[in-house]
Every structure is written in structure tokens, then in C-alpha cells.
Amino acid sequence: MTNQLLAAVLILFFTLFQSQPSTSSFSSSSIPLRTSSTAGAGDIRISVTDYGAFGDGAHYDTPHIQAAIDACPAASGGAGVCRVVFPPRTYLTATLFLKSGVVLEVQRGAKILGGTRLEDYPAEASRWYVVLAEDAVDVGITGGGEINGQGLEFVERFDERKNVMVSWNRTGACLGDECRPRLVGFLRCRNVRVWNISLIEPAYWCLHIVKCLNTSVSDVSIFGHFNSPNNDGIDIEDSNNTFITRCKIDTGDDAICPKTSTGPLYNLTATDCWIRTKSSAIKLGSASWFEFKGLIFDNITIVDSHRGLGLQIRDGGNVNDVTFSNINISTRYYDLSWWGRAEPIYVTTCPRDQNAAFGIISNVQFINITAISENGVFLSGSGGGLLRYLKFLNVNLTYRRRTNYADGLVDYRPGCQGLVKHRPAGIIMESIEGLEVENVNMGWSEDLSDTWDNPLDFRPLTVNNISLIDFHSGLYTQKQIESLGAD
Image (cartoon, rainbow, N blue to C red; front, side):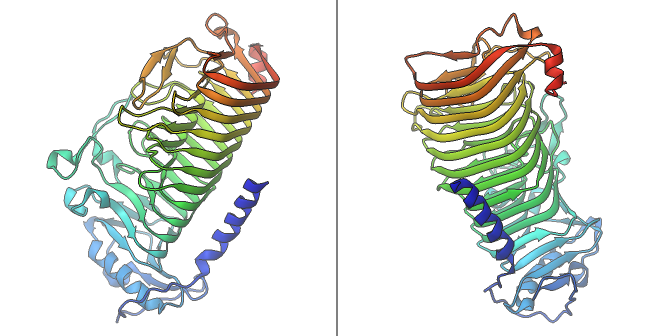
């Protein structure tokens, strides 16, 4: 009941907050302003074309667009949100910097195209975004159009297993092999709203929410090349009071990914989303130095993903009070270069390396879950970081092979034990204190009868206080599998 009340309060809050006036003040502009009957009460609209943006997709419109953004807050006079309008054209740009009280309205048929040159982005790699808001209040993006990062221009070699990507580390601008610009970032912002927009082909992460308070993401379509690594859908980092709903995410890397790098993450709700990914559909971590608490994931469809619901705690942060409910999952194997082994549910905590601390995962619920997968559930704590008080209620698990990739591996990556040989099982359990299983049905197809002979795999010395109520397992006929929609 507490979780349901929290979700209702968040929905009401995000419906109302965008109407609150901005408190920012900026210098005035002498360029005429356009108003519209479709704008919200007190909203002002400025067209980027009035500031000289041509929108031919070949010449950079950055100074003209930025001039419109800079003029917008003063135009509203602090009496409401000002919208910067992009009429239907293609606007090539370097990094755009949003201001408080500004909403980008990228109209249907309009496209913001991110530049592909290093000089298109700030000197600091941490600020490499096509659209960036820093320390802003009452800010957002909408309009029905598209923001496109030209991610395919950053593919050095196309590979069906995993694309090889360009990295700007060769320039010395940053370190590692993930040195590419993200698409949209909100850093240290309050009252963020992103809705009715398509975010397409990021070169790196797509929508990045960092140290923000009160964020709403709704009716957003995210698409990244399915073979490209690191093109995460939505990364929520060190942010509180975040609400995500009615989003479609189809990408190569993790789809919805909460992280705690410099502070805790509280009160995240994600509902009514559709996800396909070669990585984890939902993944807590692996950046996990601080606490995760009060997370709800409800009414989500996960299709053909490498991993369904994942908790990947590697840096000592604790997880508490997380609910996954009303979720349909299908997972399958992909190439070993991608983390994951087709687990529908994956809950792990172990130190990333010898310098990392142990994290504890507790009070996590899986309610009304249906999964069809090539591999089983993996629940693994570690010596100093147990899994505590997990609950599975009304869960249906169906196991059948559909690809030719080898099985028999447990995936602890990143760090920990890496990939370990292990005979498949319905649920593998390690280092658990408290597990409640009620009304859980598990079945596997006839083609697995020679290799799947263990519904529950655990060492009694590391797994304690298990309760099994109405747990059923057995062989499914082809007809039964078809009735479950497994074909």
C-alpha cells in the first residue's frame, strides 16, 4: 500500500509541477516573440528560425539556437515557462545549453542533429552532450520531434556480435574506450520534464539524469543500434523523485539503469514501458557506491533481452525496498561479449575488486512476473554482502532453448568471479538470508530434459530461512509451452 500511495503522489506531483513559474531572471531580447494558443498559461514561444537557424542539416545552427535559448528566460519575465520552438527542419548543432525556465519544443518533423566532431563539444568530457542542462530549474524537452546523436557515425566497424566504436581517448580528451558524447543530459537540475519526444542513435548514453530532483520522463521513444555497446536508454544517477512512464526503449545496452556514484538514489518509479535490449532491461548498478531505496517497476514488457530484471551491486552500496510487479519477460542468449546469460531475474552483490566494499540487498519483491527464457533465475550474495528477505509471489517461469549459443555458464561480471561454468538450474541461490517463494510455477521444455534436472540449486550452508508455499516445477509439453505464448 505504501508503494502504491507513493506512485500516486508522484503522478499527481509531476502533473502539477510544470505549471509553476520560473524564478530565473535574464537580460531582455529585442527580437519579436511569437505566442501560441496551444502554449500553457503564461508560456512564451520563440522560434529558432527567428534567430537565424536555417535547418538544412548541413550547416551548423548552434549560435542561432543558443541565442534563442539565452533570450527565452527574460522573455517570460519570470511569469512562466518559455518554449524554444524548432519548426520541421533538420538542425545540425554542437552542444546546446539549456537555461532555467526553458523547454525545447522540437516539433513533429523537426530533428536536432548532434555534431560528430570533437570540437563540437566542451573541453571537459563530463559535459559531452548534444543537449545539456546544468543547475537549471523548470526545464524540459517536448514537441513530438527527434533528437539524433548520429551514433552510426561513431561505429568504427560493424559487427553482428558487437560493433566496434570510435573512442576519442586517442586525442587525450578522456580515458578508456567509452569516450563518446552522450545525447541529452540534465545535471544538478530541479523540476525536469521530458515528454513526447524521440531520442535516436546516441553515440553513448542516451538520456542521463544526474543529481536531479523531481524528474518526469513520459511518452519518450528511445532507439539505439542493437549491436552498439554503451548506448544506454535512461541512466538515472544520484537522483531523487524520478517518474518514468509510457516509454519505448529499443537499444543495445542497458535500458533503464539507476546508478549511485556520488550520492544515494531514492524514490524512482517506472511504469508502462516496453523494452528490448542486448543487455539488461532494468539494471541497478553496476555503479553502486551509495544507497538505492524506494524503487518501483510496474507493468513493463521486456522482449528478447539478454537479461530481464537485474541488480548488479559491486561497490558497497546497499539496496532496500524495491518492488518489481506485473512484468512480462522474454530473454535469450546473445554473444558472450555482452554481460548477461539470458537470466529473467538476476540479483547479485559482490565486490568489484579487492578494494571494493560489500553491499547488502534487502527487501526486494517480485510480484506477478511471467518469464520465458533460455536460462534460470540467479540470486547470489557474497560472504560480507548477503541477499536478505527476497520475495517471489505469483511468478511463472518457463525455460526453453531458442538459440544455438552454449549454456552452462554463470555470469558474475563485472569483476567478482567473471564467467563460471555451472550446470543450468531453475533458480541458483548463493549467500541468502531469507527467501519467500509463494505460488511459483516453473517448467521447462522437453528439449531441455537431458540438461535441466534441478529446479532449485543451492548450498545449505550459505542459504538460510527459505519458505516454499505452492511451488511447482516440472516438464512442459510443446502444447503447454505454446499455450503460454513461448513460440
